[in-house]
Length: 415
Image 1 (cartoon, rainbow, N blue to C red):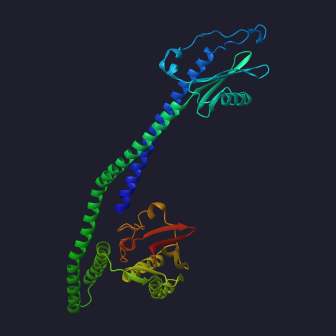
Image 2 (image 1 turned 45 degrees about the horizontal axis):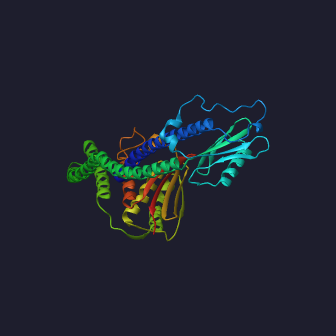
Image 3 (image 1 turned 30 degrees about the vertical axis):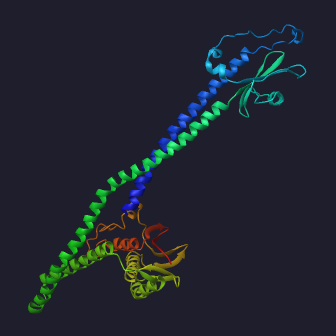
């Protein structure tokens, strides 16, 4: 129980930390990418503003068309080292006949003039003013009698972002691993006091049960001897009745302590035979209470478990179903194999159990009917014992209510 709680705490801490860490890294990465992209596009825009088509006859320009100013107003990116070290390419295409008027390539000639012409033509045909192509960012600008398609090499930015992402992933992964062990440490610190308190509670129940067993036996023996001497007596009968109740409580306390603290001897057992063996004696009780009993039990369904405890589990669930069934109702026992588990479900027709009460049904001393005082020798320990048995068999137990049907389901690993 506490191991599951510890891992739930670790999962909660890690989920919060991972979301926070990934969110922070994503903001840093996206902000850096946008900042670098924006800066590169501004430099490319500045390049298009500064571009002048040289050595081209003025008579080819339409009448009245002038060349844009050489240095328009704007930030002087061209004076920065980043601008001067950046690699630009350009293709000027006539707006008249679509001929290529000029191609400017870098000295390194990473792209051939023919490749740049093809890129420029594709961009003009797409009628896009900006975007990316291969490892280039581009901008298409109408210069009047020609269209300038300018490119800027984006390799450095892409490599920088790739490096940033790689190191972010590496160091983020390392940070998550470190935080995982930190979360385990704090989870242990959180769970330890609860586990110690729970162990003390179990020890107290065990000690109290053993300490009360002897005086209860002595009171019972003395009351029986006294009854033989004085005969029937009202006050003596009260003593015997309350002592019997006390004895039943002590027995259940010891049973719970033994189930939780003692590791049962496990062996291969046929769970179907055990369930049917417990169901048969209850047929009379079911009939006397005006109920019906239906059994759908799979044969040769074996589990590794303790036969005595599994018998007690079936008995507790059946007894609980009988006591809480409405008159004329039907109790259904279903045992089947589901993948790698044996599933025992005991259902009865009765009043729906509120969700708030369902959470506490397997707690010790909990009874849904708070008005009951234990006069029927029921102290809210039966389902707690059932849960302890299932837990000892590495399984789980649950309750569900739907359409007036209450179902208790125990799931145990099958062979």
